[in-house]
Image (tube, rainbow, N blue to C red; front, side, top):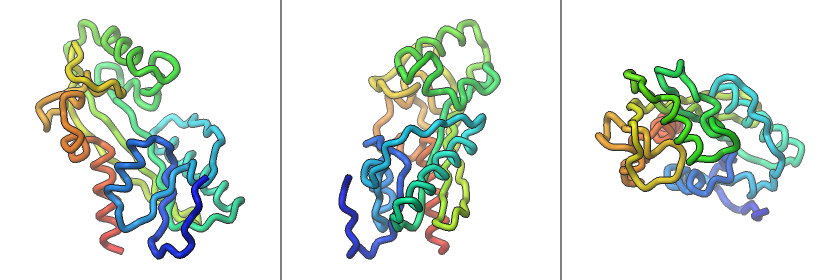
Length: 206
């Protein structure tokens, strides 16, 4: 558990994640804040994300972290919790909130393989990524911010990313798959980047 610098004048954001890529992204985008991960605050419990929508799951995470912070009397200014996934039109919006475990237990390669299988013969390849971020204050009031990236599902993998569905998702805006795009391109165009941009606009108006 990291030591929180009590002399730091920056406002503190608790990020409901231990994903190193996500932590780096938020630290880059919110340099005026101190970003603390779950490991930084000593949170080790499993959060059961049993919601049926992205908003429900992000709120479940935010509430769990809020309860923990109050119990531990840890001071903070905001909690950020997000949930995201791939929604395919021909599959009625699936895999949706089950994107990470579409083929079982968080196996990216298996998820992509299953998606290719269930999309065999489908003429409608349209899809979008959604990211829903909950921004919660210490008084438990919150706001949500949504980012959407539109594209389509290819019938083969393109790119060298092993993360999620990046090699199958062709971004209409980028003209390539996320797996073929640079990190900089993905940060600007991806669903989380768009939701983050809305949070930054919100902070700028305070």
